[in-house]
Image 1 (cartoon, rainbow, N blue to C red):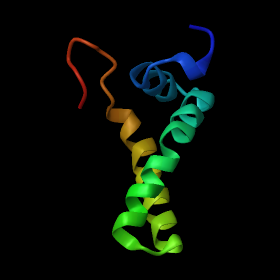
Image 2 (tube, rainbow, N blue to C red; image 1 turned 135 degrees about the horizontal axis):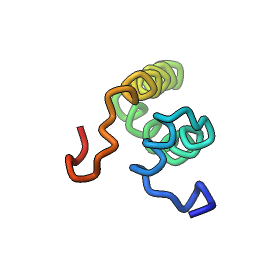
Image 3 (tube, rainbow, N blue to C red; image 1 turned 45 degrees about the vertical axis):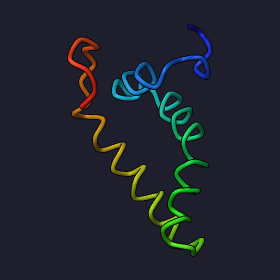
Length: 76
């Protein structure tokens, strides 16, 4: 698939693990709003929700190193 928007989350995570910043950007754009909505439900403060989401995506970037690219093994 040539268009990153059409790629699965697994494909994008694998590409991001290999250093493709565009792939991670697609994941970020795909999940930013749902993550903010969930964080807002818990915090009820915009600044706190933004902090939670920022921390979550930072953790996701760090966790890419441990992401298993073998689809037979499943997700982490």
